[in-house]
Length: 245
Length: 319
Image 1 (cartoon, one colour):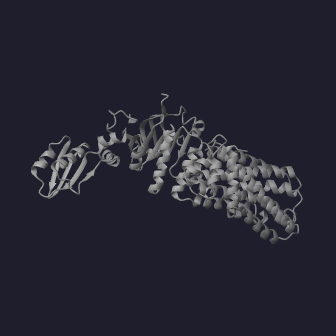
Image 2 (tube, helix red, strand yellow):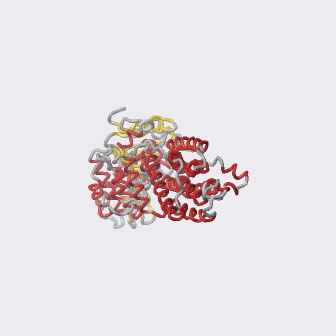
Image 3 (cartoon, chains in turn cyan, yellow):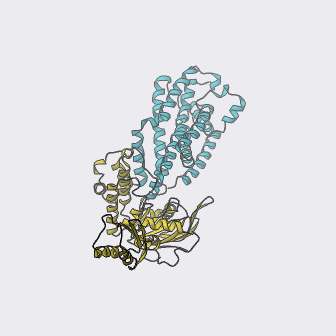
């Protein structure tokens, strides 16, 4: 695979292994917080968790935290840093094909997401057990669209924000409210109606609902999946234009 | 497009907001030449070359580079250009050999040979972040030459290099030129432009002030050569002889110090006169005007809206 995109993917993956601390946020943060909050509500099914095991509720939710961490924090900071330092200009001037960098970032983002999700499940399995998968196709589709959508959003943010520091600030500002309201925070039944209304249309909430409900057998979550697909198409279209070299 | 022209620019204009950076610029670069773009910071040099490479979209004007339009055919054009950009970098943890592998393809030159030529063979496994400024510039030059470019654009190539490293890089640029490659050099180091530039184009305020061989610009804008020596009780006869030499503009005497100004051939005439007189002062010194003097003269006298360049036979000219 000696295409420009292939060479960029290889180089980016190598660089990532040389700076493992970069992965701390997308790997360690979801695992640690899942272990903490998964243990906070016990393992007995309760009404507040739609009569499911609360620990399983969070295991089924935290894959989306990984996806959001990659898309809202890791990629924007990485890309903004490249832009700030003139790395992208150098790729462009060297004649790298226009789409090669966008494709490379998409692939690297998806590989990172897959590895981090696998590690999260590997840690969750012996501690809380993995919940039975009720509708694997829907879960798989939601994860795939969600991963592509958030990676695209990350690429978009990285090409818009002026510096790595601003990308980090904006990324964290987007990540933590989304995380608390839509994925890894308190269960919806303890939130007030206003907060639930705010949380409902957030991309991460849509993604989490589209993964968790079919996974735990709580319903197909078709509305959330449709909303997620629309957002993914929009983010990908805009990001593709912005990331052209 | 004239086949002999590698770059043809007509009426190029580029503004960032309200600030016009390149204003109605014309530029022709013939094949096989080294052309230096010179001027103070903010003259529009870098923006001009970025438009030539298709890295920026001009607001107005037409460009043809190696037969392509950089605006609509950047994808075809960029692989034909070797480019060393100002203010650009590589990922800090990327190693030298990996950078060569990343920027090279099956059709590019042997990266190892280029690394050896530019003294980076021993640094193959070093991370970009650990390279010195000179090593980084040499690596950028290696990357720029990988694809056997027909046009090489070098923007502030030797900025921050020590004198020995600069001369090594200059030698490499001369080798490129000898091999028939066209080189567009952007610099505000006048000695660099003078040493390398077969022709130089002086810019200010996004416009071309004048262009030509460095010696021609010096003749037109740098004024006179100055010869100084001390001769206590200098005889009036000698000073009168010097005053009447061809090309002498003025002779000043302040105490024992004598200053002669005139066209450059005056240096030889004054030297000969002193030898004939039988007394060559030990502190005889000569100041020959340089390209830097010429640029300063140009900038001092420039009315950007004026007609400095119109009657010249130019590599570049303001419309």
